[in-house]
Image 1 (spheres, rainbow, N blue to C red):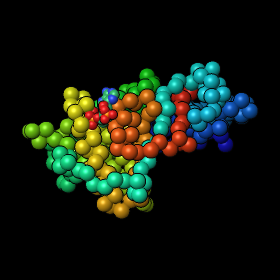
Image 2: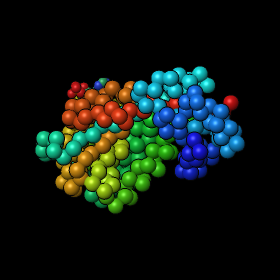
Image 3: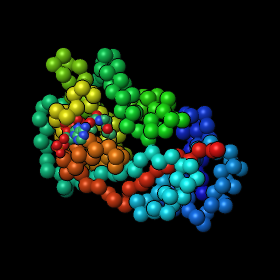
Image 4: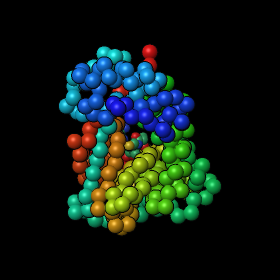
Length: 241
Ligand SMILES: CC(C)(COP(=O)(O)OP(=O)(O)OC[C@H]1O[C@@H](n2cnc3c(N)ncnc32)[C@H](O)[C@@H]1OP(=O)(O)O)[C@@H](O)C(=O)NCCC(=O)NCCS
């Protein structure tokens, strides 16, 4: 089987969604790919290509695949962390009040506009809902950490939502309110999120973003995260004609 059926995505979009890992959508596999695509009645397949696989990506484009960005993965190992340098301007949220919940949800919805789903006109109207669900899941997660920054009126103006799996921490959601960007709030939250995750005992922190997202890349590089180049993946959405 070349195309993996994605249960969650299919249910969420009400469509048949599949995905192909790097190397699968290739010249050699074309016949089997298309047989599978039509037999299983796929509406859309997410195609992933390694950074080097220009041929595969060109082929996806030739077949009408929509380029939706290059996924990049940043990592920081505990031994490379320079230690807690939190500036006191960001805090880990404990019990979330109703007002805070509304502010966080609104930021999560805004964050969806940087996602590959927002890039694709056929998924765009689902993107905000998808991030709401993602935020709710994170909020209710046993090992989740939400770091937030506030304005003078104690309104949340940015947050980083983190999860922990085993000894790996992940910053899943990173966002600053549009009118507060470029003022160091992202940096302040990063410091707090790193120290909070390492304090929980994780050995490594990862962040997934898109190569095209200049502000996010600058922020993570500023925080000394290193790109794991082997994880770079170009993504195309291939829709049924
Ligand atoms: C990414 C984001 C969280 C950064 O937060 P921020 O508070 O604006 O960032 P800071 O002010 O702390 O600046 C961090 C770095 O990003 C750079 N930066 C901020 N906004 C930028 C922009 N629009 N374009 C280019 N670089 C930018 C800053 O110059 C700084 O880098 P430097 O130290 O090398 O100068 C914010 O821009 C955002 O919410 N973007 C939309 C959501 C998003 O893309 N989230 C990340 C998804 S993985």
